[in-house]
Length: 295
Image 1 (cartoon, rainbow, N blue to C red):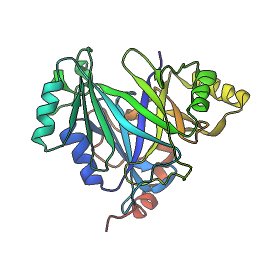
Image 2: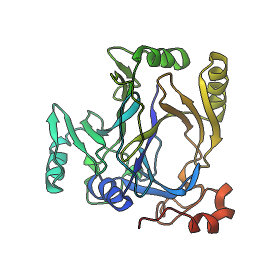
Image 3: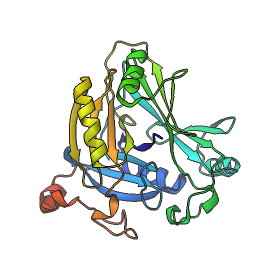
């Protein structure tokens, strides 16, 4: 079965971002680090208590970031899974925090502080396992389970569908790739030839879970053989990643399940200090001196 690993976006205001995803949505702040491609940019990770693959939403922090323009190709929507019998609780919670929402069946639709579309979908799944539950005011049986959906918007949906079919064997039916019993990816058409410009709330990439390094190596060989646009394969410390541009131009990542976020801090202290993966640790002083400032 296929599954999401994480989704990564851009935000302008780190304090508002942390407030929304931890205080309102109740995710744990599991990692405070840097963008490994641009060490001036903070990179925040949110997830369940362990930062389990499939539960993680990440943001690159870019002060003074401008408006985004979603035209020819872009990724949109953070879909999150709720356990059974939790929808009414989340309605009340959003109302308490004065977050405007609409309801459609078992779904709540609203926007975060960067105008990212967020969808909470009640499922028939049980609550998080005790070791994944976040220590906060949200009852354990109501906490967000993890990623549930996202959308790829492209000029030629058929070409993108063929990429997933040929590369991964994932079929598109009625514009949707069903990854497993609950989770899915939508491939939707755009009607603009204008280029997309990244800005506040833009999605940089979607990442899908890969069992281990051997499986990732096999994906790399297959991508080479089939002639897809490989950007890079790289170790991020917390996982190893393969980046590929699908035919519509959006970045897809394939990331291993291990070693996880405890390589540079304990499970109990995740997210409590600014950390760097081991291969960046000797650059700490320079990195800290050159981080983007908010003023």
